[in-house]
Amino acid sequence: MTHSHHRPHHHGGRCGPRGRRGMRLPLDREQMLARLEEHQRDLEQRTADVADLIRRLRDEPAPSGAPEPTPA
Image 1 (cartoon, rainbow, N blue to C red):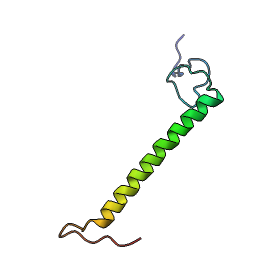
Image 2 (cartoon, one colour):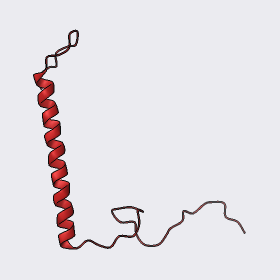
Image 3 (cartoon, rainbow, N blue to C red):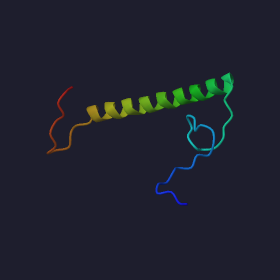
């Protein structure tokens, strides 16, 4: 007997926050803290990069023929 619909395969267990990238053991407190601190440093660097880009774009004269941006 064949079924007229397809049922998705489940591979047991829940996917968790990392999806199906493989089995991971829960992190202990120190590992979690280290990862979060690293993530925070990455975000701070990206924020500084964006702020620098904004500052440079505001300080550069607009190319000729381009409309001046209106202040926000």
